[in-house]
Image (cartoon, rainbow, N blue to C red):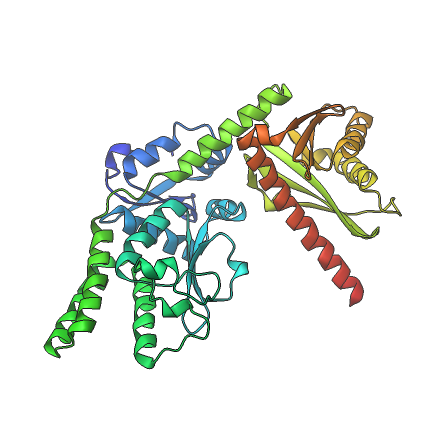
Length: 417
């Protein structure tokens, strides 16, 4: 990678692809300026990026006419190629998906959590929500669609603003085949727009407009004309991509620096291991240790434990057992920081396990009800006073809790079988 000739990389919008020595795709990204974006990788100190650069041997670039097409192209390639470094971000719930709900009049939602919807079609992943929202705003002004969470009795504000048909989200709404066809036409157009080939789509729509005009179907032609204008706006838009992924890297580093200062650490806490316990009234007791590198979930480092020595419901002692067993594995290496799910007592038991192993590893414990973070047995901070750290810690804890609940559920189901 050191031999890459930046002058040979175009200064245009497009997609870039990092590949390893065997030509396997490692990472797919998009940029407003390909040369500028790729140059930034060599001046950034993130561990994730360093690992990517160590593994990469080549960069392929694909130029696009504008930033919007770059967004769609990146999404398409990530979906097809499933690059491992993009997968890390997806596990950290940073990717967005466009959901078309599975119903007669499909609604459209932008979300991280596709499992919450019964979907007719899912388009994505996309790496930026802000750009997608801007694209949807442009489209919706000319091609209305529904986004109401629930059906209602009166016309919604979106209908008054001309952003949806009005009848599409009414309770007990009656609509004929013509209305249904018009709505479905809009949905199909939006799906095609997010397919990314705007030039061919524009030609197709223009051709259809000419046919409608020849048939003297002026109303239909006018509706398609609005769609054509929306596509044209997208095609010429030059301000949607904001290199949000680089912004996130800087935010992560800022958070790690804050943690370092608060905990008086010698180095940044790049590798954090989070511990959580799950059981049902003291039965089917399990624990997990989930690893995060610069805030990114590392699935290959997940460690699962069945509690062996604690018979009654006692989360602090279960944490003690899990940590004791984890620290026996010197071959696993050690984290920069342990994050414990719990308060003062959980902190005390975790500290006991580390001390008994003659180790010095920093611990923090999250007491969720009041959002307090224990830095020592008798020292805590209110996370509401540290917004960046609060969001970071809560996200890590939430991911860990999801994993331990999933593990616990599987254990219970295996016993039933």
